[in-house]
Length: 103
Image (tube, rainbow, N blue to C red; front, side, top):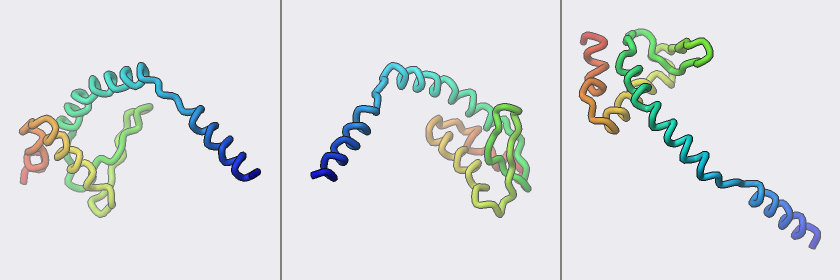
């Protein structure tokens, strides 16, 4: 009986502590969707380097961490370009790797 009481109290604590703030979610979604075109454009303009692929950005000092092709995250950049093309249909994104590396 004591374990059941503790389980019920723990479950209620978790359920009651969760908030569903739809106003904040809507504001965050609007902010997110406004930022997407800016981020797409930055990826489109990013100068390609055949020896290092961009992995992440540090916003505080605007530096880009690059990784070599043997790194397990090296395909993220190309994968992001493909997903952006799927979302937007922008041919410049689709041909970016070929055009950027002059293959």
